[in-house]
Image (cartoon, rainbow, N blue to C red):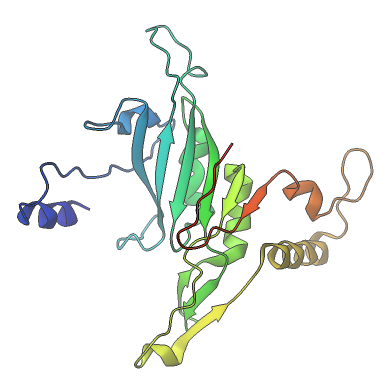
Length: 219
């Protein structure tokens, strides 16, 4: 990140270039990432997987609180934030743990993560795809899921021979995972004795497909 900032500085084009800081720690505070010229109620930080030196599987965390408390004795609840988390190639679920541990708390409004699993042969995973997205959702409990980076790109040269893409819909991913869990754990029943199914876990999530040039208003 510092190398990228230094390169952009060298262009002498922008008045100010700020490096996005990582969102990490035992109880990270989203307000620590707010920096001028952004207002205090808005912050942008980075979530990254361990040992991912190229940040291939990282995410941007955009947190905001449009009614921040002005009292110095305010509780962390009053300074809670909503967030939009965007990851073009997917981010391992474990790397999202700082969001769950945040103080003040962060409630994920929207999670932008692709459904397609893309790899170069069996060795290198590029886009983590739908099943990683399901695992990440269990941590974030996002109100909205928005697909991203799933457009089919035409590869060329040698890489094209090894490029593999597995296309999922949300329904296909959920049902495939449900079958896998049943094979491993058998039928899972809830406290009331009723069999648990995919609708029980994902029923409150709003799945949105936003095409190029389209927009959505999030409630």
